[in-house]
Image 1 (cartoon, helix red, strand yellow):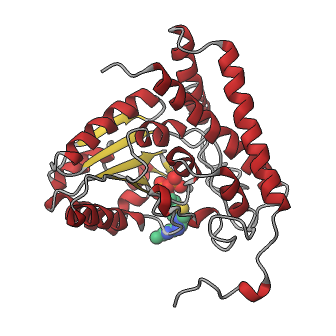
Image 2 (image 1 turned 120 degrees about the vertical axis):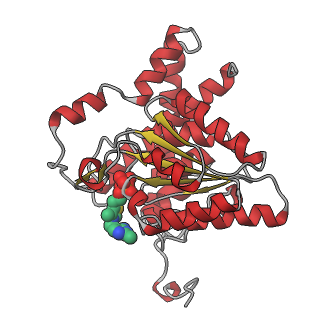
Length: 319
Ligand SMILES: Cc1ncc(C[n+]2csc(CCOP(=O)(O)OP(=O)(O)O)c2C)c(N)n1
């Protein structure tokens, strides 16, 4: 089905916003303004963007340690995100969570997670919750290739499949789990093949092509809403940066990085849109400028915000 021009421009804008946010995060981290650890999403923007474009505000996503892109695509506020990364009191988690623990329940973002694979059963639980409450909400669960080798992957997907829960399990296969390549951690080529084990469709999609992701996830969302159960979607993608900021990433072959850089998801989509006159050079520049301004404002907000007070340390801590 043809996609409306405004929607196409939205997809492009979202990818650019994620990229500019992450580039600035990388800079601010290097400048020592962001404590803790951050994992940026540069190179993988088409996955979150194409997938989340199908969701309503009250649909759910479950994110990962590499979650900024998911949150931006779901409608997260950049100033609250940046303040959280800067550990400021005005951040999403009052400055106490940091990059890997942001949640925004008002927009269905159930949380990022530092524990690899931990979001998978939570997404199954969100699907079960929608079923019990009788809503048509769907959940997209993002996780990496590394997470697909964790026990919770099996437990979460198995349970969702036997109960036909409305969950899309979206594996962002960027070929590496820290310094471990999938060639040594998987005995199969496609993680999507594991869908067979749970009696659900497993679909491989080009994660650098936002429209391919949009189409594949669209089918999975339709299936979920019809009560036919989950789909395992595997997006083949690549992280352009090290595993975390500060990781020199010397374990990855130069030729491999260059091959994937040549398939930059934003460049690919921009070329498609400009070739078909959906996007002009002027609009490209405007979208970029707006994204940079939005990010600059978020950084200013973060820098001007106070740190949490020492006496607040134990507030909002549950034991
Ligand atoms: C249960 C668990 N094991 C190990 C780690 C350490 N760790 C953090 S990220 C990561 C790799 C995750 O790889 P993948 O799931 O492919 O996601 P990517 O970083 O490639 O996006 C590992 C092993 C962890 N955080 N949690």
